[in-house]
Image 1 (tube, one colour):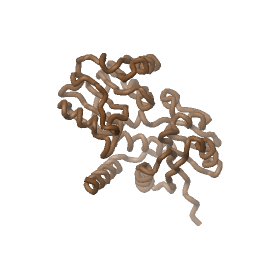
Image 2 (cartoon, one colour):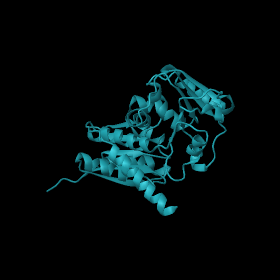
Image 3 (cartoon, one colour):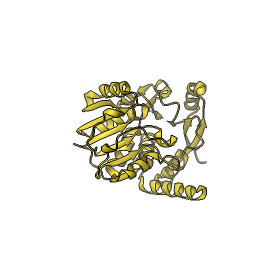
Image 4 (cartoon, helix red, strand yellow):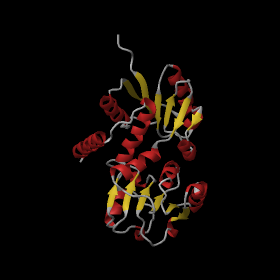
Length: 284
């Protein structure tokens, strides 16, 4: 008699749009892992009770998405260093001793996509991050770990950018500014960590930050998330990319934490982009 598959899932509200079951299903088939992965739509009021019950019933791991990443910090018995830096958790894993480890794989997912998939060099490069919210906090430590010359954080409210830059100053050269004080020199890499692409409105970032060699990367992805990419291409950047690769790479890191094996990602990323393109063609 075959043992029941280990239970995993993603918790959010709403969560019906999540691509995580598709991604982890492909990872499981590729690596021969016997596991089940489901969507769990859970409100903020019910989150703590749901997580406790999930692991009490023998669940092995959860991905955490909006709006629960901060609340998930309290659901863990211990945090990884990168989760502590991010002050947010996107992965919970049951350990052999029965305790729950909280991790944040967003930043390492971004770095793997930039460096391994896209072949970019971050060391000794100038980086601009647009936005000073949770998404920026989640990727700062891994980016700074690659020793860029400078990471500038630009935000509509300058004080938030200054505060966030100061919080990470011990990890590398950081500087927080308002949009009007970004400067006129092009950056090597610009990361959009705001929801501007989804709302269709770009923050008032000066065009001078984009040069012919600038790579522009939007953490958002999908049919609706085009404002930043369109803006970057209009200013003739070298490359303008959505965050599909980060999505897949952060999932692969969570899978490694759960199953002890890191899946290959190229086939999953290609399948995800093809699936998205097919959906776009049907909707277009």
